[in-house]
Every structure is written in C-alpha cells, then in structure tokens.
Length: 145
Image (cartoon, rainbow, N blue to C red; front, side):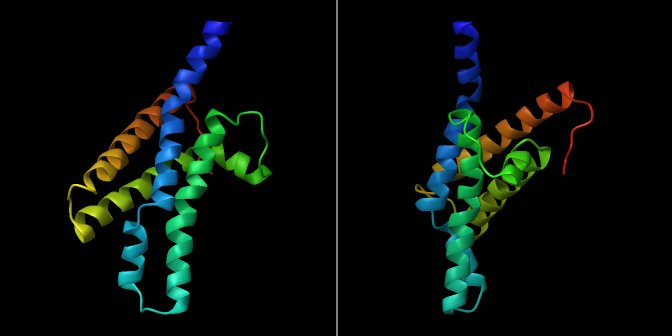
C-alpha cells in the first residue's frame, strides 16, 4: 500500500512542477502583461485589465494543478472542481502556454532570460498533451464541457 501511494505522488509530480511554473508566470514573468499593454491604448483601465489577465489567468490554472497534487482532499468551489475534471482544462492550459510561447518568440525575442520560460512552456504543453492522450485511451468518451 505504501508503494502505491508513493507511485501516485510521483505520477502527479509534473503537475506540481507545472503549477509552480504557472505561479512563476503569474507573479514574475511580464511578457503577457507587456503584450497586452503594447496592443491597447495606455489608460488606467488597460493597465488594470493587463494586470488582471497576466496575473489571474496563469494563477487560475496554477491553483488547479497544485490542487490536483498536494491538496487532493480539500474542496474548492463546486464548479471549479467540475472544471478540473474535464478535458477542456488541459486544452485551455495548453492554449495559454502556447500563447505565452508565441508572445515570447514574436514580441520579445528569444534571449537568455526568455529561453528557460519558452522551454518550460513547450515541455509542459507536450507533457499535458501526452497525459491527455493517456486519459483519452482509458476513457473513450471524455467530457469536454
């Protein structure tokens, strides 16, 4: 029984690392914020909107991944729990990571500070795609919404 519990924890470890990475994107990385500020006219509303999107969106997904790993028995909002168990959660996370990767490549350019972030976005997206395909093999009729 102890071996089964240990393997279950190690199976979810990439989600924990992905959650920590998404927290990094929400708190310390400013590429999404700069992209939104550069495409909108500068005003108090656009700064508030850019801050909300750039910090809130990655943090929304980070909480979900950390919830899946170490906070398994804690209950969150009912609809958030239902959202975490759907395939659309994986799809939206991959879309967010792909968007951030495209912003880094096209707007900011790849340099020594953006290269680790770009690599982490690509690797975590690939891991989520592989994990999602494993889920689809086990469940032939997944619920998207």
